Length: 291
Image (cartoon, rainbow, N blue to C red; front, side, top):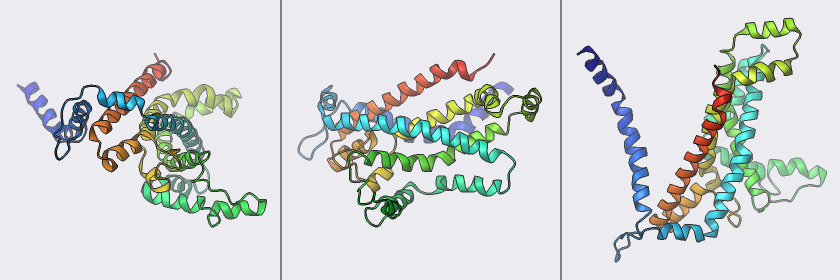
């Protein structure tokens, strides 16, 4: 009876969170999957089952493949650099140095800013002729280039913005992990005459692997659900150079009102995230768990 009561208490405790998770996550996922096989409801043409037509349209859509390619490049650029910078910042502010609290706050500050505000800040940096970056490059004769208006640099620019904002957030997890490592390991390494780089490579980095896996999965999810600063800074342009999957879904669903096609892209996005996340877990499992 006591076990049943404890089990009931446990389910009642998680029920509010489970209800919200189901209402705002699982139910929309199921509805998106169902709608991906339906046509878009029109005033004089109700929605009907069309099978794989939306997926056929998706495969034939060059903008979808452009958005997918952009998203992969964005993830390849932002995820490793964000993790590396976060780890370096955590190692730096974990040492005993003057102003350590101020540095931690400075590194974390971009994280608490809304992405829309961050986008507007960086627009000021990238504005041709008047932006801060332009003023810094003018003395070297390198000004007059529209970074956000060029196919070659627009995606790089929005990637830099994401790295700047997310690195401080990931730093907090690494800092917490570093503070759980016993200082006796460092003292033993110093007695043995091991260099700081070898100590980091052989001891610290392996012990940080569980945190790295957690951060990597979150960074990858963030890379595929990016839309807000791209919406503000480039609007997916120029010529779809910064259009990513979630922005394309927004554009098709709420600009062109083709909800069936948008649902099909949503299903593809969820499948990509699931496959990549599972791949990360299985690929890094041996390096994370030690026997």
